[in-house]
Image (cartoon, rainbow, N blue to C red; front, side, top):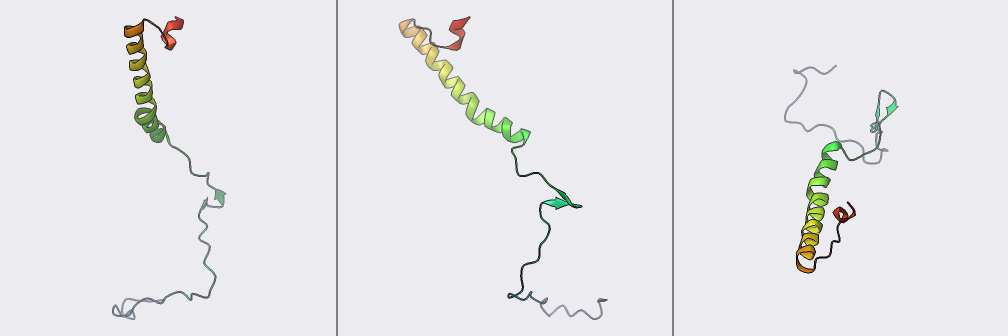
Length: 81
């Protein structure tokens, strides 16, 4: 057992032997159970919706309204109703 009296703060800790194989840390498991892989969270889906989907829909809506005003053609989904 190492006590505070035997530790020398001026000495660097021992480095692992570079020729030894890496130690398996068990990453991806908890108490022997395998963890699911990486996935997009609800916050990630919401960010994608706000940053990418809504602006594209907004631009399409504005273009459809512009075409409707200029030429009178209804091209959008709302024309089906």
